[in-house]
Image (cartoon, rainbow over all chains, first blue to last red; front, side, top):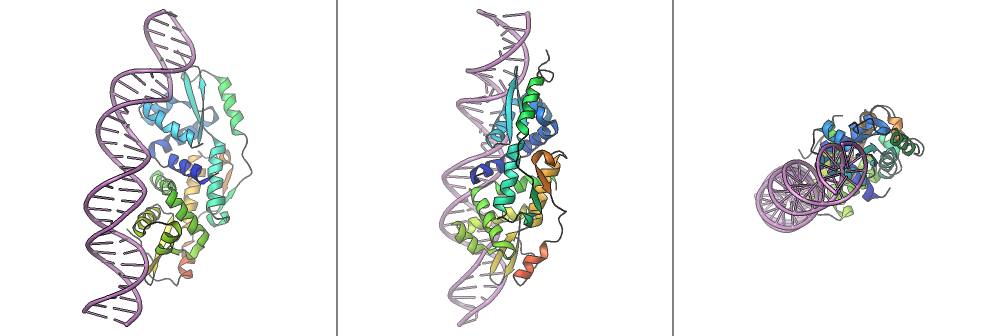
Length: 128
Length: 128
DNA sequence: CTTATCTTTCAATTATCATTGAAGTATTAC
DNA sequence: GTAATACTTCAATGATAATTGAAAGATAAG
């Protein structure tokens, strides 16, 4: 992870509303939440949520997919892993033990879970 | 760690110059660097460095102490640990394995080492 | 085809942050 | 005491980011 990406990721988490969104999505797990549900959960205007999740996605912390009329967002665990790896390995100058941290082996499973969620479809906000 | 502190810590790392400073200080280890040396290393004006390190210290990522005419700054490993713990435990919704991470034992007594390293004058010459 | 729903994009406003240079504080040397 | 050094604080400017509401894009239903 290059420094520029890391800065983007830190910035993405350095805002009250985005951190709230991030935690909601962590709770929601790989099946994610629709943009509308995120807006309701966070008490924000839809356009504002769009602005924030776009920034988080650009930073590699979220990914998104469309389900009928909804766009779902979920945490990209790979991205979170990359950020933590950067912080512990690069930032901590090769001495992650300084920070009392140990990063487990490479990432991998996040993407498949989300696609499973995509297959699950509807259910959420798409009820009409 | 409360959300507000975490936001401050993320923000502290979410800037090119501050991340550069942070990495320099990580490399420098517990003996830290003087504000002037940080300015030279980062190629920044002294007042600008003051501004940045103050923010990082407020965020709990650095600590400072005076040695003669110099003010030294070093990474507060406890603070980094707190941030990483927040990210893995609180943010990751109690499922840190989602992020492929494992945080080692609790934080505690990192404060003494650096003071010993610099001949310890004032305990806390912070800019606030 | 028309309408409804969900979301994004755009433009404008407001708010916050970063940088600069000058002035001020603390410490040491003479 | 005065002068020098090291850093911080202040005030002003310039640069980014966040929020809002209106308009537009995409998808689905009638």
